[in-house]
Length: 228
Image 1 (cartoon, one colour):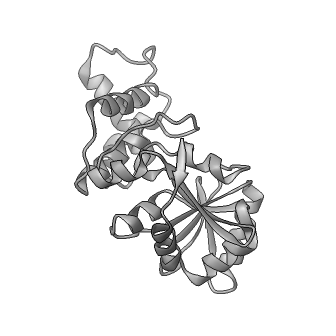
Image 2: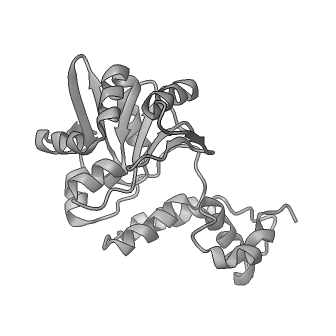
């Protein structure tokens, strides 16, 4: 269930968005939504690393990225997003697209990320998960097992990053995160009784999410991503 973002929080988030992003969102209406980490960081008074925007299709995401970039910045395409490397980097996510703004919210894996803001009918709208505020205040990671196409180890790496920022995770949520990771392990290809074998496969799954998180082991881990 979603609830309204508090007016003061929505306004504070909008004040921290670059003017070009505000202008583009006003033009795009509900087809361009800011969601997730940017909102959480603003409300929790944490450093903002980047701005994630979501749209209705890959073509729409590329078009809005071009508008935001203008003639000043280049648009860089990755597997997940079109990125504009401004002073505050902006990413228009194209791996996941949504036909309605409200559908962006349940796509996030933790309640503290389940929030969204968009412009509609001359007004700014803001919604969040009903647990968003209480879990953010407690710095608590509650996992939601979203139904989406994602790398198996993505949520576990986010747990590690949040732990470094002082967040904690209940055991049932941690169990669910591990279960999502283990779904990426094919028991027919490994001896699950051999801990070293399982560890190598799990490390490979985590490394696929972010190859730069442990760069000194790149050469050692590369065979794990092969079909051997």
